[in-house]
Length: 139
Image (cartoon, rainbow, N blue to C red; front, side, top):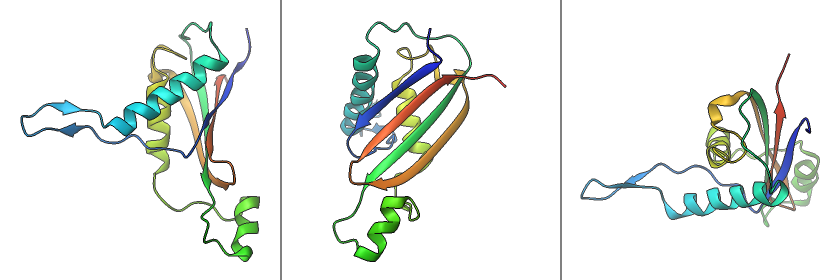
């Protein structure tokens, strides 16, 4: 058995949107959230097709890479590419982590309550994506 799992979700990072409620009081998950959750599941299952959900303590590392805005000056571009200038925009780190970890429930692990350590980072890149690393946690 490996010490963990590393995989990439292609495209611009997304956040977990709040459930919406219709006028008749029926709650539903927004379509964009459902689509992104399915993309996360697909990315994991493509890399680990025969995986059985884990039932142990895990550490998660989530690194979100956002597109560099087209209007960025050459002066700022270098800083963004080196990671000196980081995204100070939405989505928030906690909402990025939430959509990723919720999507992996029942697929990578039995429940995201098994994540006992979490690190989340935001960077700029010419290749927008989210990189996820799940490792067996022990200190």
